[in-house]
Image (cartoon, rainbow, N blue to C red; front, side):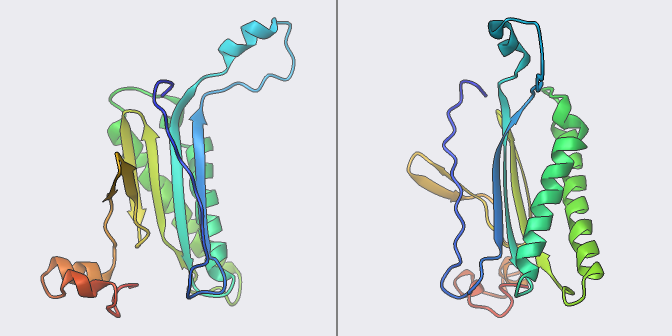
Length: 195
């Protein structure tokens, strides 16, 4: 990825309706690196022990559940996902041209671990029943982007002055649109838009 220029920025906002922001996001460069505590190597030789950026991880989670529960759910999900990818995901450590299927399988496992973490926390704390979050991730290993989404936090790509929607909402309203029962322009105002 050394020759690819990425211009990535994150921002979260409470919006016009809610009083508390329950969203979390994370943008991180994926590197192979060795943290050197001491060495007899000259400083110029140490540079070869640090790998360049191999990829980028982009995550957004939109918590639901009200009060602090949504913020807690989205934070737990992002933390569990990034921890799994960083410390457990085997293909994080072994990059190859034909790695696509393995990456998707591992990302699916990472999402499942995030889900389990949120469920366990909700069960362990009284008053947190029903806390949940959406979770959308792009794992970019140039020239590929692996995109996984649960819920209705959309992923867009902005390039050359165009904004393209990459994912679709996973809601009842979107399913009704797909079946021809609901018109697309009515989906956002439908009572099924957040279900």
